[in-house]
Amino acid sequence: HAQLDETYASKDISLIVSPVYPGPHEQVHIKARTFSFGVETTVLNWYVDGKLIKSGKNISEITVTTGAVGTPTTIKVTAAPPTITHYEKILTIWPSSLEIVWHTNTYTHPGYRGKALPVWGAAVEIKALPLFSTGGGVLNPKNLTYEWHVDDVLLGPGSGLGKQTLTLPITKSPNIQPQISVRVTNEEKTITNEKHITIPVREPEVLF
Image (cartoon, rainbow, N blue to C red; front, side):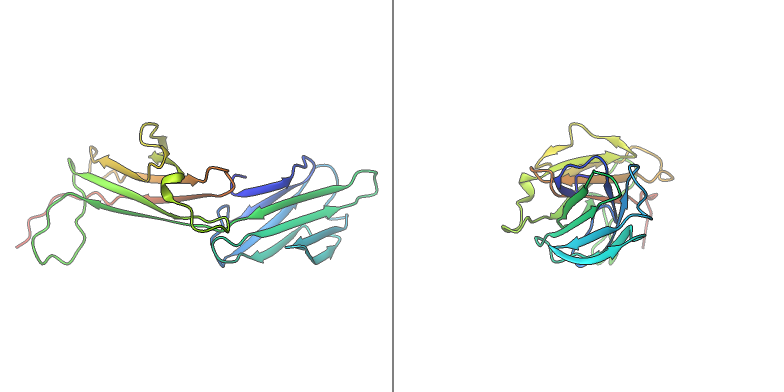
């Protein structure tokens, strides 16, 4: 997975990570899967940052807690079933965070305490706020690649390197709430994060 930096390319054993995009100080569930041998009947050795934490049969999954943004967690699993083949898989998790903020150009009267909501014909400016680091400082958002989707449709012209902001015209009925998602990746493709939001389109109201 793009979120994971695989330092050993084994096709015989894979690691399934949940959540797919781990955040800082978050519990992450990791499960080993293979079609080459039975993970329930084979001794698996699990290492976290070089330290053996679990070993034995029928130990096909572990849970770890990530560190701060920019602090990697390296997972390694080895297996030696009764064959001549040795199996090994290593991955590195780089925790990251991603938020989306938005505002619209609709009018609200002075002193209005709520947030201006979009109506038909308005425009919404949406901005991704990633926090990525590979240990050498926070990465500049302008050096990241953004992949924007609206209602599961890729916005090619609105996506690309440094395209942190998306302007969305509201052209559909208030009964249809646009679904926005953005996937952000660093240049080396070792860190990926994704976020989804719904834009609450409303009918205009006159307030006294």
